[in-house]
Amino acid sequence: MDPRLEKIHKAAAFIKEILDNKGFAPTVGIVLGSGLGRLSDDIVDPVTIPYKSIPGFPVSTAIGHKGNFIVGTLSGKTVMAMQGRLHYYEGYDMDMVVLPIRVMKVLGIKYLFVSNAAGGVNMSFQTGDLMIITDHINQIPNPLIGPNLDEFGPRFPDMTRPYEPRLIAMAEEIGNDMGMNLRKGVYFACTGPTYETPHEYKYMRIVGADAVGMSTTPEVIVARHADIPVFGMSVITDVAHDPEDTDYVTDEEEIVRQADAAAAKMTTLFKAIIARL
Image (tube, rainbow, N blue to C red; front, top):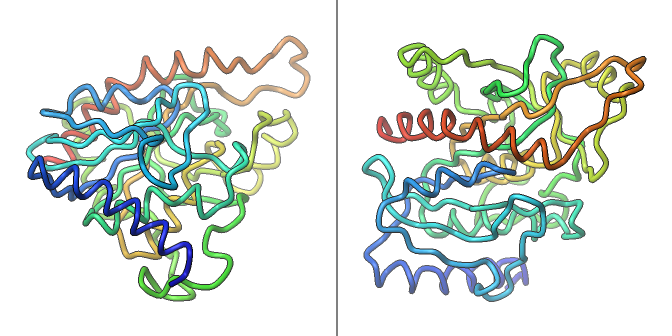
């Protein structure tokens, strides 16, 4: 057996034994980005599974990422939330970065919700805005490079609609009903761990990006490879700045604080969408 498959199925078997004892069969996977772990507080009868307890599993090291699976009931559905994700910049290879998504696929999820804290490239965006991701530009190594895992999907998966139009429309309708001023846009994924220079922001704007971050696209690519519909949302935690602004500094702790402040709105929206699935 392909060693990647062995690792996926070993981790899934370990988690499944825990979930079976609780009678849980997750149908929705959720990835909670930097500072966005508050949604897990709303999960009813939660079971916490630390990444470090799972055989062969990587451990999240980024600020604001606790490194747990939280499984339980949310809006009447059994969900499996990642309280923190894995990043390429942490030194993990791409198979490890996307391992949790493939494990959730084996465990039976039918939908994937992804979130992140992102920089606002679109000059009309403001700190604290919520942006529905409609498309992305991926500059992180593609996680499907290497021998194809035929068990999960085809060699050349279609990426015409990486983010599910039906879920986007649902989010817009719910957002309007709730009086939320939701943005929509394209997410640009780069490796990090450095934040962007002023002229990198300018380049991203020219090529069509509205927000930028260091995650998300590998998970979405692997989910779409496995035919899982995806809904994505960015919390805009800092905004593009003029190259002539010599006093501007990107502050990581401030980014996490801004994400935390917007987390309540994102949680409300995610819960309402999940209730309609």
